Amino acid sequence: MAAPRPLHGLLQAVPLIVLAIVLLDSATDFFPDDPLTGVVTPVRLALGLGLVALVAGGARLSSFRTRLDLPVLVLLGAAAVTTYLGGHPTAPLRGLLTTVVCFYLVVGLRRTQPESWRAFGLLALVCVAAAALAAFTQVTNDVPTGFCRTGLLTDVRCGSGGPGVLTRAVGTFSNPNLLSAFLVLLTPLLLLAVVAVGERTARTAVTLVAVTAYGAVLTTYSRAGYMAAVAGLLVLAGAFWIAPRLDRTQRRVATGAGVLVLLGAGAAIWAASRAGNSLGVRGQAWEAALRVASHNPLGVGLGRAGAVVSAAVPGDRTFVHTHNMWLNWLVETGPLGLLGMLGITVVALLSAARAAREKSVIGTAGLAALTGFFLSGMMDHPANQDRIATLFWLVLGLVMAEVPARWRRPAASAPVVRPTALPAPRHGAPRPVPGRREAPVPALTRRVGPAGS
Image (cartoon, rainbow, N blue to C red; front, side, top):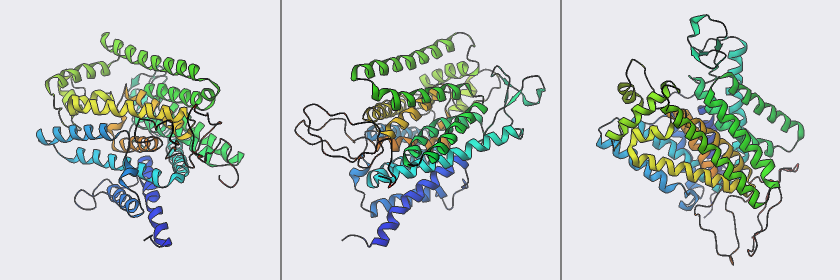
């Protein structure tokens, strides 16, 4: 028997409220980190209520299935093995489980409430504006943040008083690199807000917020943030405006060129790390991390990479992490954890690219966000911080809910139904697939009518 209408409306509203809580907490850290009781923090309580509401509202197990299930299981298994066999504290493992729960909550919400993409876009608008404006406030009011660089983007002591000392904005975070990672990951999702609003001046306002956000990235003076922001913008422009005008061969050539550029950047970074001290402390951290990983096949434990690498590097330099996302997982969880994280990376990028190829605005924005974030992860590990980790898994959930759970396509004689594309935002005219009967699927174009389509 169906639930009464008021109860059904409440069950639908609760996951959206939880989403708002998680996003706002990621942007501003307004919730206390101390648990309410035992290990239950406010965010964990909210996530639990959201999952209960989804299931009570009719979500089935199939609503939560994604292509990332196996890599996520491998990553969790590796994290659990290193935690319990190594006798390490379980708090980091609980933190990882919390972010994974957030991932599946987003997937379930998108699958059961397809129109929720509008809420994602508008909430991203609020969160990006809060962080970006806080950064500009620090710059315009000359607020000391404790982080400074010279005009050559070289770290200096803020009290040195030398010429050309620049104060790095931190916004609503404790570190400028975290602010840049947050903006690189979330700002491309403002494309959803642009599509959600149908009036020209409203779209102009959203665009101004996006410009402000990328301007706030400049105030961090983060080299990795700069490269990631440029890469994300190029992917966003290419996938949204240029790719729909290309044929299949041209798109493949452009995609291959982009992959080669990324691989070349990775090879250049690796080569530079081998050339003396060209990358400064990063080269030292990577070399020490590889030594540590070779002697700890099960990993050193979640959250312990920084301390272990610090002990392995000569001198009194202190590291919080290894300055590389995948290398950090290798050190903390061993080869099995690295395999899980590599699987998540590859599957997420391929899925986002496929969704973008089918002219999904969510896929396009997600591809830009993940490309920029993964590129910054080559030189840093912003997801080492809980708020950025939560946001990363949230964006992963948004992307993975946009594609079917299985890679295999239906038979040619069967109608093709894109499960998460029901009223999903799309742009451009759909391309017919030769020899395949397409089931009618409502689609949004880049122009949204006054009724909201």
